[in-house]
Image (cartoon, rainbow, N blue to C red; front, side, top):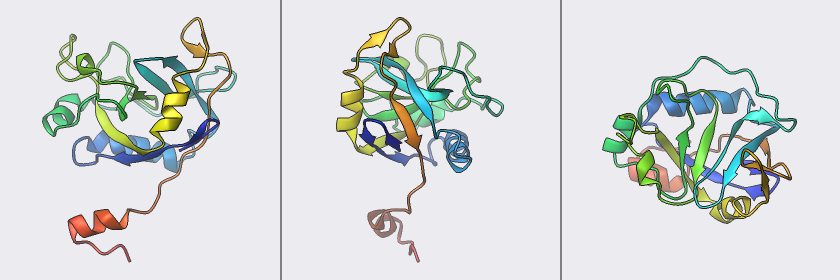
Length: 173
């Protein structure tokens, strides 16, 4: 993920949240995130993006996906610092393109949470957390919107790391 603040590398958890990962990857393949912004930044909480353009116009999305917070949590993935999770409304099955990066451990967002559902964790930042921390320092206006937009220039899938190939025994050729 290339942003106006720098690059962020994300590892996804397809075994723990297959529908959420497939959903995110499809938006990546469609280049949907290119030109979107982190529209909600709350220091000490989360940086949320993936749904609005630089003019704060909400983009049209595909249909919502089913929540996988319980499955992800039981697989050991929590809303800990540096993890990515699906943003949603009060409807647990309303997640579309928006996601957030946890700026600290947010245990109260884990399944079952206060609402009985929680939020699906589907990935983590493996490089560039310093960029995320810089995002958390920006000045915001009402609605926690950064005064100066934090633009997602592009999001692209990278080839699997060689270390992952060693762990799985698969050959990346």
